[in-house]
Image (cartoon, rainbow, N blue to C red; front, side, top):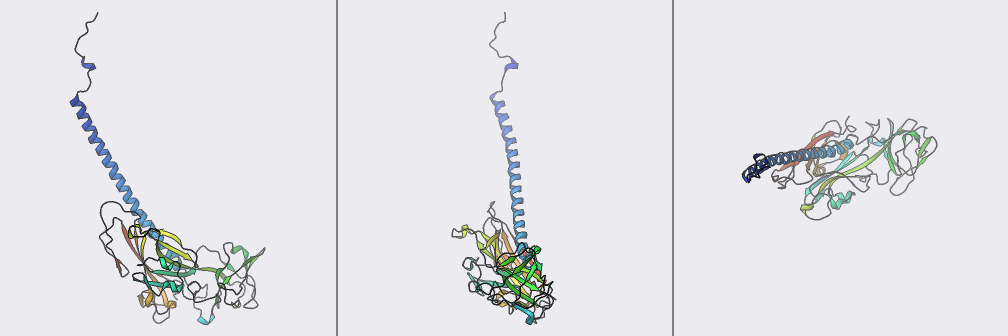
Length: 355
């Protein structure tokens, strides 16, 4: 028989209070280090994501405008055509939507919610909700990717049937505006309706409000190019309906042919434009860059200088933005919020306007 001793064997002993406290302290130190690394990694990830988001929004916003500007003033092969051979059959041919003689048009923000000229009087969409510090840019152009067609039979008169290859028109909708051109004549008109047959499409040109002023578009022969064109309005607008600067969420919007505007890119805070004009009207050189209210003739514009201020969607961190930004002569800031911002400027030549 074994005698039961009052002492606990060494192999059966546990941690003492001191040992347990030391172990817990070391574990907490290691855990704190791990959490610090995780937190630092999270902040770095969020910072990189925020920077990438701003850069992505900046590239996207600028690309929308540049794509339309590059194709603005499209006239087919009628590059050097004289004014007498340019016909606009659209109703209200000098209106904001239908004035395809001028490739671009702008409205200069003069501060305090005032623009020159007045966008509301000109018919700018949502003119009462525009960002008070940003310009409005209107671009009339061919949209890359839209299908084009060619006249497949000689027209006997300027009011004759316009028959176009059917294979090229699957994306044409009712009241689409077209530029019809060869190397001698150019005409702009609206087709309502578009009548499809088995092999061709007949573009009807009725005289009606909002459509055409006349059905006479000039006589074109087979092979003349039929190209759909649009008028795009670009502006900055608040996407948050709640009033007050704390809820202000600016975005770049676009309206096509006067339709309801669509939000393109969030975080576009300021849009400014300057227009390069040829004083003599030869459309060969740029003599000066001016604001929209100083353009003497929109048909003399051969380049556009764009400036945008892009901000991050949300506030982060603790540092505020104390900087001021010069957006093509319009100085804004400091904003003193916790958002990141980037400033972009670029100049684009209107390829269809230079000789």
